[in-house]
Length: 248
Ligand SMILES: [Zn+2]
Image 1 (cartoon, rainbow, N blue to C red):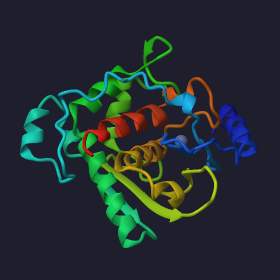
Image 2: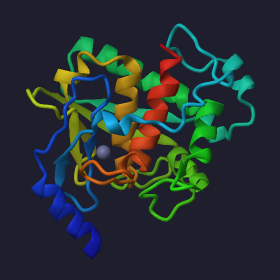
Image 3: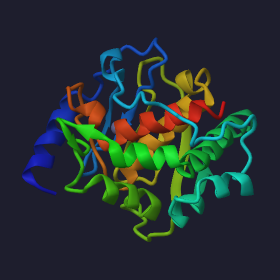
């Protein structure tokens, strides 16, 4: 794309196998660089500080199951744009076992529920970085524009604004600290069963959303930096994970 992204990718390639410790329940993330190469990364516990711990409040209605939004939920979130309530997912499960599909389906349902909350909208719109209402690595977009891009759901490789998360998921196993990885040239993400198997549904949902945010064009530093947790994929992935926790 440009000189910056090429340099960034070179750095990424050099740190291709650089992975953090993931024995905590912090979700490692895979990463999609801006111009087509593949890298794998993870996050350290120091990055977990979330500035959004005003947390999930009464705007979210916890439920014990993961069914579709009910009429009650919709009426209680009437300030939301219609696209937040109609947000859909189109996930292709490429090699998942029946048990893995069941677990992944719960995470997918959770993602839809989270996007349909007022808490999610508020967190995205109110996110701050470096003392301003903004995200790091925001592609020049305001928080409101970023929120709208989520609702539009136009993936770089499937650029129709169809209000639908289009994504493939492929499982693999590796005895390392990489939770997953993807590339801008593919429409799916690779998910390491080493982590997937022990992750709670909201952790899977957070990781899924992080990866998908790459698919709609957002990136982040490939190695741990102070700004990386404030990037769109990390910060909003955390929001999904944290709001999703109330639906467990
Ligand atoms: Zn990433």
